Picture 1: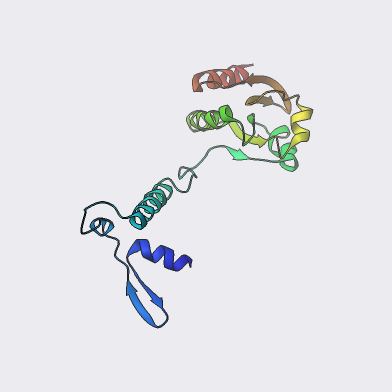
Picture 2: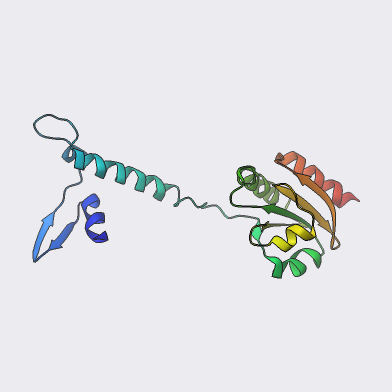
Length: 174
């Protein structure tokens, strides 16, 4: 079924009960020869093809760029954050949080800009509720700054790159 569906959009041949059937997928084949209007089946194919191409171009919703921020869990928190010699920015976030989704590329931008001497990690509070409780995370997104194993700063809510960078530089100067 899937191979037939895909081949109908790509114009490749589909074996059907011993016969090979060529399914055209040229833009003009979507139009009725009599009226020049788009056929209903063709409209469905066109919409499916259009949406598929958008997902392929967008990487199925994923990012093709390399992220400078890694996701950690409760089991990694001690070794990655508390035992780190660097200053660590922890982004406490959730998948359902709109501002968290806006904050993520901003943090990635800051990490790319000033990465030396700083670590950037993110913690999904839905999967790591104990960490959210331990560090009194009550609003999202929350950016917690750790130095020498202790939380020394916190930014609550959506923040611009320059605000995040200034908070980190201020912490490194202490």
